[in-house]
Image (cartoon, rainbow, N blue to C red; front, top):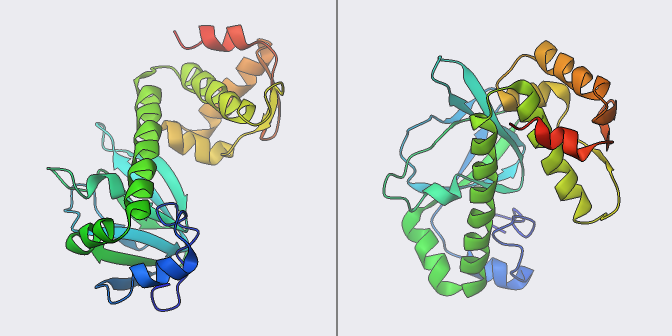
Length: 229
């Protein structure tokens, strides 16, 4: 509710009642930045001195690989914090480039003000810690994918992970819709789209899955698991 901007849907604020949220952020120092599509919000290895909260719009995070290419880590849609897990790190720098993919607004809250928010509301502190723990889990999964050498292995890992997430709410279902299209997935793996399409077709031909656009049915989980080796 900073200048009538609703933060209630932001993960680090979702446990706080709207009236308490308004009081929490009252008289707080911050900066509101507006970015157009293609604008660079932060560079990899630049210092993080503020908590960035994406209020509207969307951004992509990319990392420079060893061969000089760009690897897409995540596409983030509002409302979400950006790099919040690194704000209090000893080496508090952005691990990625952050670029706006559409017109976006971002609130930047100084580190000192964030500490005051922790002291004022335990729910805010708890949600902040929980969110960052979940992000760490996501980054661990991303790192695991990067260590898999083959595209087939990367895709098998992703499909098994998607199935696990889907079955947390639909235990017996083996059919799910991928959360990324093939273009997004190729950037996520750091491979070309044609190479990804060929691999998806090969996995389907081997009888491990049935694919209909972004809709996937797992036919043989063991086959997918064997592809991770």
